[in-house]
Length: 167
Image (cartoon, rainbow, N blue to C red; front, side, top):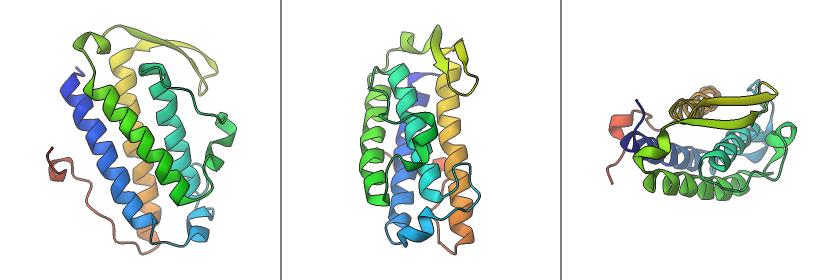
């Protein structure tokens, strides 16, 4: 179901979409981005921080990357500014691409065992399903942020996968 090509494509897509968001965010007022807009983590920055944290958690499970330094209850405040978010986001996207680029087919088979903070339990789930979940979660949370940004009058770049630059 999930293969190396899918993972490489989605890792590139994730980085492309995060860079596109950064290009919008860096022109905005920090106070607007820190204000509560009813998103899952309140603010635009808080929700993007939460997504960054989630990606780091998945990378720690899939690629032996260090877990984030903040707990789940602190995710919205993981970085204090969009510039700090972008620096951490850029590193996480690089790690995600490195993981995808070094995958062997066997790396996507079998089960992944981990402690789920969402269910507060040990979980054993198919590795490929966990990978698909990670990429879907990225798209979902970015979509929620984009909806708020559009409501704030921001012109947003396209999200169509087929428009992603090649290479």
